[in-house]
Amino acid sequence: MTEYQTIVVETRGRVGWITLNRPEALNALNSQVMRDVVDAATAFDADRGIGAIVVTGSERAFAAGADIKEMEAKTGVEMIVDGHFDAWWRFAEVRTPVIAAVSGYALGGGCELAMMCDIILAADTARFGQPEITLAVIPGMGGTQRLVRAIGYYKAAELVLTGRMMDAAEAERCGLVSRVVPAADLLAEASSVAESIAAKSLPSLYAAKAALDAALETTLAEGLRFERQAFAGLFSTADQKEGMAAFREKRRPDFTNG
Ligand code: CAA
Image 1 (cartoon, rainbow, N blue to C red):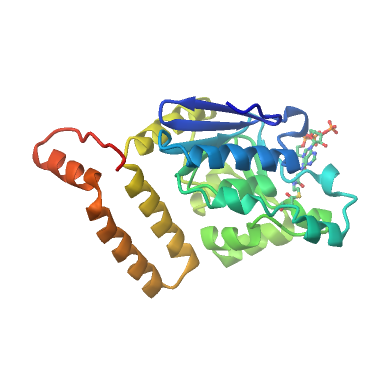
Image 2: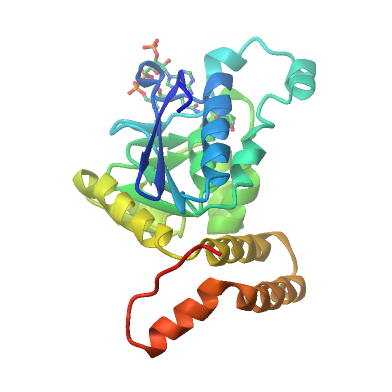
């Protein structure tokens, strides 16, 4: 398995784990982290043996944002020409369901990384925010777009314009997180959710994720058309026959991911 500098990567059964590991910088997302996470996530995505990915950080920080010290001296031209954050779109494009297990700070790019995932499980210690405005910049990894879609314009605007943090309970109330769990249970809960997903048939997982994405990206009419096509397409898989036969025969399905 590839050696990474800024993350720890493990495979547990059909679940791929990516743990951010820059404790000295509260897991700030520098270019190396971006390369490592994108590389590990795309490798898991290409592996038929993986049905779910978990991204997590430390107890103290999921990630405290993009690396301010790396960005500080950059010019606008460098940011554009180097496409400083551009590779993150490849992470958002993985077909495999991704769970963010968030403990502690998920700020700026950290909150944006969580929002690139499909499920956000938060420890009761989690704190979310987009503090970029306090640095005289704005979110640059999708925050203004994904936060508005996740929690609505007025709540998102208040967070982006003031830079204030919200705790896990507020994040759950406004729909930014899927569920809040006691900090001590976060990884076990992430593991259980990931294993439950990874046990499903891959073609149906990919189709479900693509259809959910379509809900955020397109009109209702286009999204409904996409869903109908994807639904019909799954009837050409062996796993659809197996899933429905298993229901009728009152037994557990034995999926082959084909
Ligand atoms: N970039 C670089 N280093 C960071 C960092 C970041 N985003 N966040 C924390 N660190 C570093 C600190 O500089 C510090 O390093 P040193 O010990 O070498 O000084 C170390 O991590 C520990 O941090 P603190 O001493 O600040 O810890 P704290 O408990 O006092 O505060 C915090 C924690 C409130 C999260 C504070 O660190 C903080 O405000 N961090 C910055 C948050 C932020 O502004 N994020 C947005 C970044 S811009 C962005 O993300 C753009 C985008 O949209 C992509």
